[in-house]
Each structure stands twice: as structure tokens, then as C-alpha cells.
Length: 195
Image 1: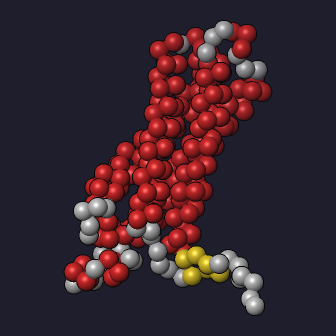
Image 2: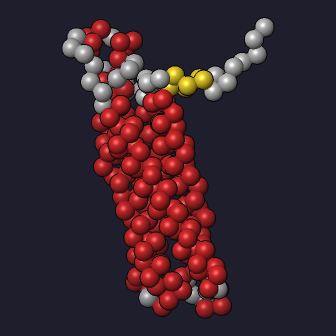
Image 3: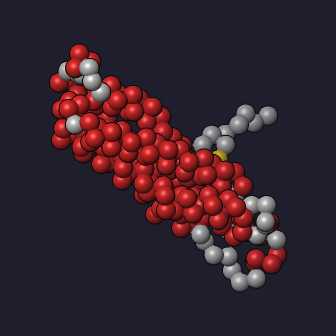
């Protein structure tokens, strides 16, 4: 069993930080909603409030880690330019150049033109908005229940962050299916049973 260094970083970016963020969103959204929605009898205790603050901060860290590893580690490998003439030699020669591989066929061009464009631009909304949510909750805490419009904005931004990350994760998985980022040193994860 082996994986390349580029494949490992893609795994850390998507299945590590990205999937961790998406999983944390379900609990975070529920806890955030419960923490700031009347009636007063359901508001969290000070200990529960500290937990939600920490949880939202951890979500922001995971979201930033996903976007930054994607933008500054994995994305340059995705955009690697093939040597002159390689584009005309077919898909086999483009396997190490995922962007060009997707663009080489009308059947996969949409994964680049729509999917990667989403990941390049709109996916940044996920960490930005969840950071805002974490900051506002850290500042207001349980008192956010008394500010109806602000509470609605915070919950809306939390949902938008989840949606942006979910769509980016979907496009990332599909792009990686059709044109995986490969290359770099090979890492041996284990040896199969030799007979």
C-alpha cells in the first residue's frame, strides 16, 4: 500500500480538514441554534457556553486549515503546466497535470470550469463566515438570544458556511475522481501479504 506525497496532502486537505469541518458543522449548527434561541429555560449554562465558544473556534481553525492547504499546497499541483507539446499527445501524458487533463475533454471540462472555479473563489466564504460566527458568539454568548436580527444573521452565516464547504467538498471529490493530484515521493503505508 502506497501513496504519493501530493496524494497524501490532497487527502489531508479534503478528508482531513474538509471532512472534519463538515462533520463538525452538524453539531455546531445544532448547538449554536440551541444556545441562542429562546425560550430562556433552554439557554446554556456558563460551562456549556464556553464549550460552544471553543467548538466554534475549532470549527474555524478546521475551515481555515482546509482552505489554506487547498489554496497553497494542493492547488499549485493541480495547476501544474505540462511541457510544450504534451497537450496534443493525449490523456495518458496529462495524468500528472490535473487541470489540463480536465480541460482536454468536453466531458470533463465542466469539472474545471464550474467545480474548480467554485473551489477557488466561493469556498473561501466557509472559513470567513464561520470565523465571524465564532467571534460574534464569543462576544455575545447567551446574550445573543436577546438580539433577534443579529442572531438571525449569525445562524444564516453558519448555514452559508456549511453550504459553501459542502459544495466545495463535493466538487473536490469529483475533480479528484476524474483528475487526481499525483506526484512527489512515494510513501509506503504497508506491505501486503507476500506469498
